[in-house]
Length: 326
Image 1 (cartoon, helix red, strand yellow):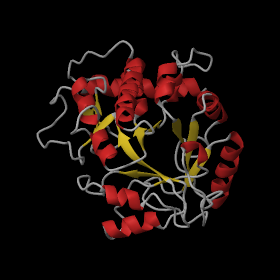
Image 2 (cartoon, rainbow, N blue to C red):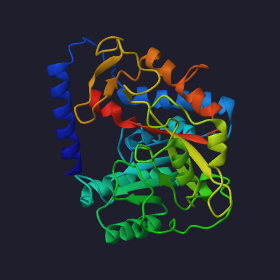
Image 3 (cartoon, rainbow, N blue to C red):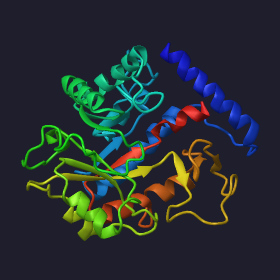
């Protein structure tokens, strides 16, 4: 059962935490509520600067109900704070690229995605495939559900897919809102491009309705300028599009501008140990005000840099970090 799989994963994670943390932290009773509050506060701050700013969390969609069940009371304040939801591995990639997601797990995920849809929130699906046949299947199935799709064979998200040759249902119409988008490009890793100019040129040459990219180039320090971002808001064939910035809020990354060489688990107090699956990514006590102040709420924050660069919104990762602390 899907629930058993999630519980097993949580047990493994807690075992690792118990053996290696040693920070003596106090975990809040309701870590899901803490993550909801984090996202709501972030959204309120962004919309105080730009009322049309888009906020999309990736994964962790059990947060849309108060008890994390399909039939639970809607977490309306949280739903009001977001504009959509991104879901990885909905059809493919569940346990490795090209691996079909088990029917029970897919049904579990779909129950929450349907809640998003019923609240007029756009669902974005990222499927990690290993063949053109799977890519076609991903687009077809998700289209039937009313979701928009990015299907790729590149889990590193480092390239514009060669297949399909043109964006799914692509056209040159203006994209004024998330509801107008029929497709999107998710590209975070610019390391394979020879230069920053080559990276920008590749994005400018894409015809997708929506781009999800990093604020920073590969070095994690050099940010896109507002002129760079503006240059990406026109599709290759004409027509305006939306550009969102990726931002991880559930882990700290040691290649980001905010990182200090002196940091180590426990120092600062909100920094936990390194994620064993992702080198350079560290668990954080995301409920801690000092971590949240790095993310939003002041002129030096990560989100303010995204706003100043002129992005249309933010795409939030590691929303499901609460699972680790449950």
